[in-house]
Length: 247
Image (cartoon, rainbow, N blue to C red; front, side, top):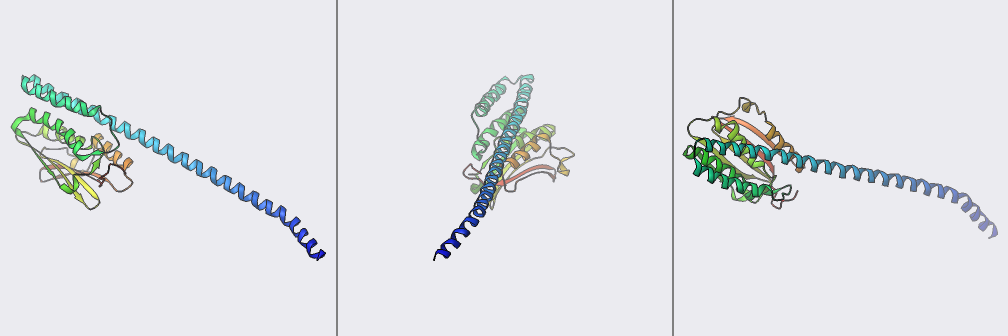
């Protein structure tokens, strides 16, 4: 019995340092693993913050273009002596400013974006009168989606700047939104002459801005394209259907 106890004590005395060494190794490994995870979390937080800052910068870049184009449209009314129309345009412009200086989330309701864009369209309708025809076609099952703010406005502004302002006679602008499974598709078409680059899918600075914002917000597939078909320039944006305003 005594020999058995002695044997056990010897084994314990020999095994204890080994066990302690193994425990220390495990603790060191766990400590390194925790440090690695902490570094990864910090890296992810920094990347998110950089994306947030970049997104805000891109959003701020869009707004001055809208201001300048709206002011130019109103200056045209002033040069033509159309003071009544100019007053109406200024009223629409003030509504735009009210929207611009309210706090924006990364995504806004489609209806809100459409209402905002309509102020710009109203200014252009005052400017061009009966020569400008606007058609808006919205699928009901797509209407509840959320989208990046100022995205639709950028597409419509692009249609006027690169197409409709150069188009003599009647000018046609069409805005459509439709649902395709888990995605929504927004398109803006105009009958202006467009850019020579349009048929090759070349995007301008404002549209590249929109494309980058989509990439920053959505992990799922999104796309922006420009095509020239049957005398019309068509801008198309596709992004995940987002009914709750969160991604």
